[in-house]
Structures are given as C-alpha cells and as structure tokens.
Amino acid sequence: MGRARDYGFVPETGKGALAGVVVGVVVGGVVGVVQAVLWAVSAPWDGHSGTRGPYTLPMTVAAFVIGAVAARQVRLRLWPLVAFAGGIATLALGEALWRVTPETTNYGFQRWLLGGVHLLAAVAGFAVAAWLVAATRRWWSRIAMLGVLAAVCVLAVPLAEPASRWHLARGFTLVGVPLVAPHLPGYRLYEAAAPVVGGAGEPVIMLEYRRVGAETVGGSRLGIQVLLRRSSAATPARACARPYYADSWAAGSEPCRPASRDRWVRHGWEGRVAVFAHSGGALVEIESHGAEETTLLAAVEATRPISAESLADQVRPVR
Image (cartoon, rainbow, N blue to C red; front, side, top):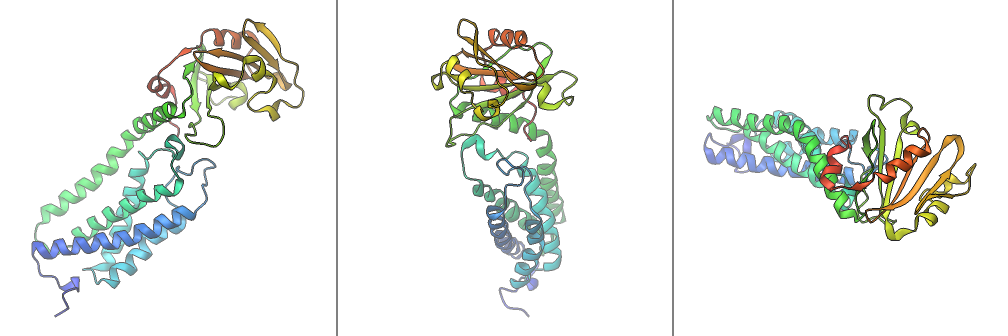
C-alpha cells in the first residue's frame, strides 16, 4: 500500500476525501501564486489600468501545466483529471470574479494586487476539482459542489454592470472633485473615464455625451466632452487661456473671449469650441467639434450638482 501522503490510496472515508481537498487547495495555491506573478509582470494591455480581461496566454497555460505538475508531485488521487478540471474551474471562476472587480483607478491601489483574484480563483477551482474526484460515496455532494460553481459563474453576469457602476460611484466620491452634470437635450452620457484616485496629477473627471440613437456616428468628434476640475484649480478666464489639454489647442486656436458673466469661450481648429465656467463648486469645461457655441453655453447654464450614484447610473458600463 502507499504511504500516508499518497492520496491516491486514501480509503473511502470522509476524512480521506477532506484530506484530498486540502491537498487540492495547496495545489491551487501554487497555481494561483504563479498566475499572480505572471499577472504582476504582464503589460496592462488595455492601455488603462489593465483590468479588462483576467488572463494572458502564459497564465492560461499555467493553470493546466503547473496544476498538473503540482498535482502529480503530491500524488493527488486521479491527478490528471484534477489538473484538467481544476484548470477549467480556475479559469471559469477567474472570469466570474473579474466581472465584479473594480478598476485599479477607482480606489487608487496597485495593479499587482489584482493577482489576489487569480489566487482566490485557483484555490477555489482546484479545491472543487479535488472534491469531485475525492474517495467518497456521497455523490450528491459532488452535484452540490458543481451547482455552487455554476451559480457563481452565472450570477456574475447580471451582477457585472451593477458592480461596475457601484465601483465607479465610489471612484467619483474618492477623487474629490465636486460632481455636476449638464442638461443636454437629445444627448446621453455615453462614457465616463474612470477617475484616477490617488494619481500624481490634478484630479479630474471626464464625461462624454453623444446623440441618442447615433452614439457610434462620428465618434467623439461629434460628441460633447465635459471635463470637471476643482474650482480652486483656476478661474474660467485662466482655464480658457490654458486649458487642461493645452497642447491640443496650440494650433489654429482663437483668443479667449467672455461670453457672459464668468463664462469664457474659445474656438479652435475644425469647428472646435469650448466653454469654461464655474458651477456647483467645480470648474467646468464643455467642448465639442460638432455642437454650436449656443448649445454649449445653454448646457453650462443648465449644469447642476449630481450625486455620485446618479452620475454612475447614467453611464454606460466602463468595461
């Protein structure tokens, strides 16, 4: 007979099955650590915070290869099956957890910390796989375990959008910029750039509005961009003279001019126009290539304070 640590020969008892699951957790921990390291050294391929999509190709391969090597080393019962099932469960749980994971910018934490998601998914995935092949006659427990795994993966889909909006609202609050929103008839809030909490630069919130029913026509050029800054950042006149993206106004820009009391306007190349004003404690810059100056001035006049939750509810999912 095998040695005590040879889990291929554990008798069909509850304790033997539990011991196999514990070893499965250890195997999952090894896989999770390797995946977390690979995640930490990988490039943020989405050009932002790197949270869109949990697995690179090496991480996917590691789920199966490292799992197989580790399971064989500890002589886990039916280790090839555990390695395959554990890899599948790890990837499925990772995708599910990723749907409710926040952008790193929402809370100002380091990207490598998201490796904890991979560690959790791998530990749980290989624990489930080890239980499925455990030496136990309790067949109903295997069905229950598969049911829990399936429920987590299925429920993550409808929870993804509410979770994304909830995290975005927290980011709006933490970034420390007064929240206001313009009234733009015929437009809706198409996108909000995730606020960078704890960033080195000046805190800003960027919103983009597009025409209802024609969101994909003309892209951002025909939309209306709104940039919110703290009112202490500058007066409207100074903000107009030196906008947040000053370099983009370097060519073909006309001098700033006052449109009304505390409202300044600047025209640029190819029909670009921007209005600068203070509203609700925020410095507001509204600009567009496709809207008239009168439309932007009216939007500034109708700008009102808004809660973080209400603003996040108006945004399309960030992911």
